[in-house]
Length: 219
Image (tube, rainbow, N blue to C red; front, side, top):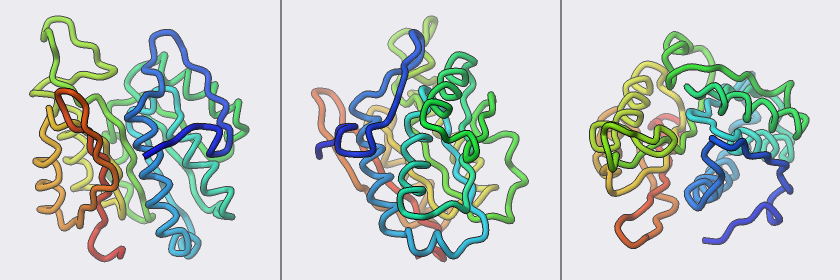
């Protein structure tokens, strides 16, 4: 699987010093966004309003890419809500949304995962996340951009708990074998999602999987 900005829209992305920069797992997530959205693009046009959540937005690259992809396909009936717990990441997302002239399509919220949005249920929604998923090397000095407690599962399991309330039509997640992406898939299936792995990349000590979970009535 190959991906570069030159192949897709020439995104304008600035990276702040302490924000997780776009990396291989970022582009693997973008690859899956591209595949999934092109599969369902005709269905998206039928909804009066679509809510898209980018959980752990970081630089905002997934938000920017998703918006530009939809607009390039003539879909304008959406709002993307970019969330991150880190203030610098929120500011970085804001800068990149403005650089790409997408302010009318994006709301940015500093919060932990999807906590403020539990009661949203009247719109078709999509959750996208490349969350921190690595077990910490040192539990006393965690890099919250890439690492999470509970063997790397804290953020992922919180996202799953809110998926149970929000019931998004589609969820796209990237995760490592080190934090057991197979367990995540099993949990999503218990919530009546059909899960498809779109990209699986092997590195020296781990596999990185990006998968989409479709609520069974969507397909």
